[in-house]
Image (tube, rainbow, N blue to C red):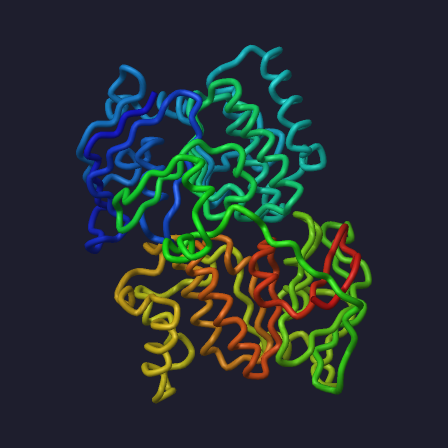
Length: 473
């Protein structure tokens, strides 16, 4: 089905090793599911862009080697035609939307193939039912949560029923129920003979689905394992490879989380509204100083909105107190550092290192702090790179480093491990625990059960804008 022979690729003007591919050789059969893995920045996303034609037809650069789909030279297929053969779900779903309404986005690809109206209606109904996205239909795309956008992107591509489906971190923003639906969808597509290439760090939901694990390092394929070989890897071997395991940990939830002492960040009666609809309904909780609170819940439950309200970034009703002192909205903003899920929104400087000097140029120790922070997240060697040229996981680590030297006491991270491999997830966990140990209030919005299991002291679960429970771990 797919044949790659000695594929090499370099982005135009890229630094040496910056997302480049070197001598990629890989054969993928029809109906096979390939799991691409490797540490952040190893070239997985670039390889998916070669498969869907974006490299070099959109990103330009230099591509050499042979790429065939069946009997055709894929490099000679115009990208608009290749897009009907190879469907793609990007790491950032926002970058592939063309409509402003969710229903319009779902049918847009089918309209452009084009399909008969009856067939389009059949596929639309089947996709909506399978992914349970009925409540998204007819809604504007921009206010949707990141997980809801991800589900819509997956639905719009899968409804076109491409022969090859390439997905880049499709589970990164999804809650456990949405991941289950994604797994069912991929299984059904595979049964129909669809070839699936999945670039992923979270393996548990594809444990029964994938056929081979392709492990990449520094733009090269370093090993290819059968499913049985991959599942037999020991925890020590997985750790050495820097990847996660195939089993998701089970959380041990204890009793209700109670306040202890006066060193508490107390949130009382937070309610938020958007376009006349209530998003959060009288939410109250607390965070102990020096501890880590995980905020979990379904996509669209209000997790990000809650944390934006707590940090003063979103207008709300209710109150926030820090150690008995009422904080106005501006005071909350000054006391907080909020790391958004979409890293590009918070990166402004022309180089990685210069990000650390924005607002801190008068600090004589800033360079020393910057060097230590970047070294801690493994990015010191990238200090002269443009931040936008980093991989998704590297951007997440850069923002983590920025938060660590911000001097703020309230630190909020929205999906800090969404694009991270096992090695960097554990590295991030260590830094988060260190930040908490310094007396900060640390809040994580996350679906990553492995991260919660490693670092969280308590968990707050939201559903429909209300608290379901707040328990100790």
